Length: 275
Ligand code: MG
Image (cartoon, rainbow, N blue to C red; front, side, top):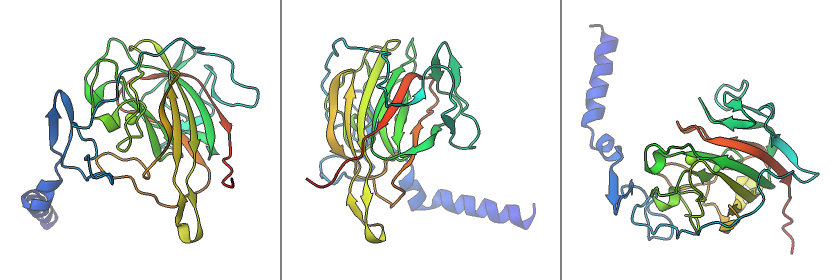
């Protein structure tokens, strides 16, 4: 055994013994069948931990009927029309998007994808379909996500007969604000997101002037009403802002589930700050 390996082994043993390392190991808590965490930071409201399983579940609202797979408005920037993913690239490697396109549908696989173009304030339309039969539970069931500016996630999950921590359910601003309602359709049926996203504004020295906002309509039901993000969304930590460009690529998450997408388009809708 050479010195290098011996040192590495020693560091490994010390790390394992350190109380800090022990404290950082996530401890899942299950309350009323909801798996989440209570060893995470408290949200600024002082009521709930990040991903708190005790946080109330969004009330179930059965969506009504409305138009799906409809033609985009004439000034829309079409990001996926069923043909190819030429408007997207692989987030990790930067090459072509690795998702499958079959029967006019893009299916998440291998890694996150991001748009080749950059966006700030936008209206987004997107349709998704959760896998059927459903597999796994909680965050493991049909997880994907829409990452505005690559940083601010509106959760995509199969929450039809599937409980998870409220701030991680469908329509939630992940880890921050649960949806106002659970308007999920059953897996195997197409679901529609219409989202108005406002980019954060940063001033002198990168100081935050106004946060990012999202108004989220899921299957025709408002589930976020001009809700502010507390910062970039993360697993098990509070959101925080770091200054960034006014426009950044839009991302879609691959989370080890095959989630289908179709009819993705955006319109640029710059918010005017002055009254
Ligand atoms: Mg997600």
